[in-house]
Amino acid sequence: MDTDVSSLELALQKRLDKLQPKTQTAGFLRTVVERQSMRIDAALSKGYSYDEIAQLFNEQGIKCKGSTLKKYHLMAKKKDIKDSPIPELPSKTESTGTAKSQATKKKS
Image 1 (spheres, rainbow, N blue to C red):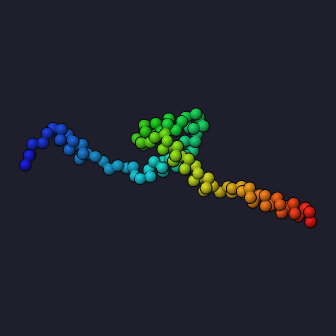
Image 2: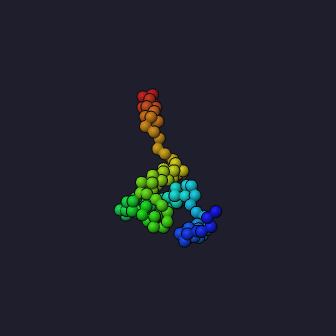
């Protein structure tokens, strides 16, 4: 049995022993993007790109690509629209049906 441990192995062992549990869980980035959706919108309206905003995420220790940020941001906006209390406009088929019924009423 080899009991000689190299200095490299000792250094590695010390680093591995000091590792803290990771705080990021599955869905972490998606959640952060949902929470920051309005601020991302504001940055985009100021002329920043998704890549530039993703760089800010990376500087804060949140690994992110511009394309992923864009995907999650658009999904968050779509989700907000679905959850919005504002009712959607009627579809074209419904509006043409009411126009026909109004035209029929006028003839009567």
